[in-house]
Image: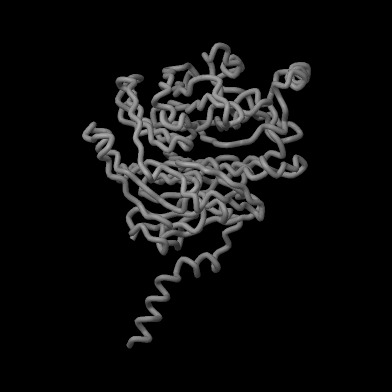
Length: 416
């Protein structure tokens, strides 16, 4: 009897590991776009050469970071370094030697950013159900130099017209004690489709270790602090495909559950998974120093990067050192045995820095790939190569896709 119970226990606790080895995870995510290097549709060869000569464009300094889709448009974010002509772009139907060419969104005038009136350094984007594109502009060049105040921008995707542009105050954008701040991730809580409706936007400061709440109805900001936002010194060393680097990073990826209204997040330099229920923020029933944060320390075996969540509460997140995509269903206990790896590929999943769970109204084809109601959209970018050097004769940047139901089939990420 005891032996039978022990075997049953081992069978339950090892179920996830057994499934990982029994399933082929290398092709779970399908590549729909790939680049050896990033290039743009400048309009003519003469304009492209002029951009190269002026230093406005240097293909070795362009790194893919994030993506989102709306209709026939695929948006991409390019990290803003010297030599990056535009950080917010759409993928065109033209192809260069490096891969599909990009075009600035809404147009080239926004990329010029004279007097900080345009877009300096778009870092993360999110499209809501009201056909609006929310853009978080960090204002940082080369990831360190602040040249313009950080800001939020909102565009009407049906017209490509700006709906709103809000500068983020300095005392909100940075830790006023350390004077550090880098606003690099956001999550939009849609409460109204009105331009000045009561939508909330959550912004992660990964250097000043804070969560910022923006209320669209009155343009107010609140900066929250918690130890759960901070990096863990034990986990500041990252190893991707045998190449290591050190990074002290707070919140990087966030995802808001439409099921529970929990906002899931983690410091990039940690092995934790945390969340906070946002009902208190929606009802304005909270004090900044009395917010209840929950989660589990050291639940992960490597650092977690970008996050996305499905309508029925399946949280997806990149696992940096594991070159994989994992999931957890919030209808189950937050425990390591309930976390499943659903995609793993040392070649194509080196650092998932952008992740969305997209919702489709009907069954359609995207790039010849059949999509059901929900699908995962991911960016991988070999971020460690920023330090070690890219081989631009090889594929470095990818956008990948998979049906949610296909990913979680026969895993513990299916609702109990």
